[in-house]
Image 1 (cartoon, rainbow, N blue to C red):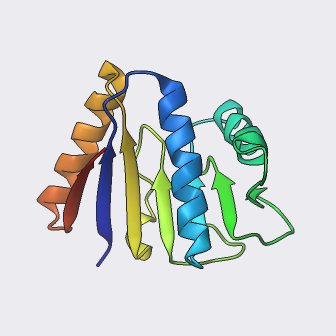
Image 2 (image 1 turned 60 degrees about the vertical axis):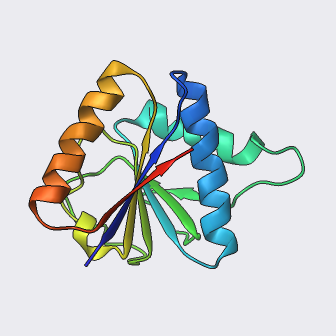
Length: 143
């Protein structure tokens, strides 16, 4: 069963959320896990793509945007409805989307990153209720 983590940041700024996601991806990949990040639209995917190259001056996180012919430890997608046919893996899903991907339950871990913006709080509360009603184990990580 998928284990779900809600990382709750005290910040309102979207930049704090993006920076935390980069740090989380870095930590997860250092532990040897593969990561799929779901985003709402191509502009968000492009933003995260650029951040993963630049958030730390001394390093970058190899990644790819799906669909792609290359396989990387970190993959970014805006497709929330269909099973990702390329490079299937089941390690970690980081959901930055307003919706819950239909394929979330195939992952060992799912992470949602919460900041104190009304729209994001509303979405993550809905996600929390969805997971709780279905009996998924949930952890809150207040940062």
